[in-house]
Length: 131
Image (cartoon, rainbow, N blue to C red):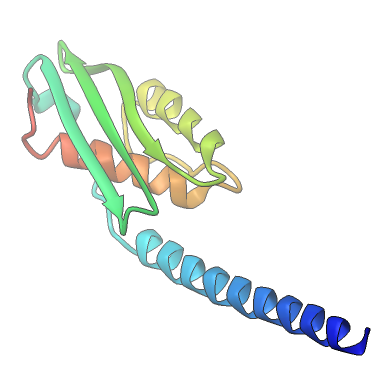
């Protein structure tokens, strides 16, 4: 019985250590993403079309988008792919970008890293990836 308890405690300790290492790595990745600068975009300078962009960080988090420009305005943004873990609610940032016609918007609370990768994908799309 004592051997079984020792094995169980050892297993629990391994899970705690493994979980801690994963948590630290995820936090480092989130901080790296948050520090990437994004400059605002003048969407009026773009021709009508669909611009594709993506941003992925170590395959753990990322997004692929299609930005639809019509008459110098963002007409629509399609989220083609979003690797987000728990950040699904960040997808509502697309509505803010369209409403404000700007990528200089506030991140979605409790989903700031996912919000940032979506904005980075939009930024990538506008750097010349018209489809």
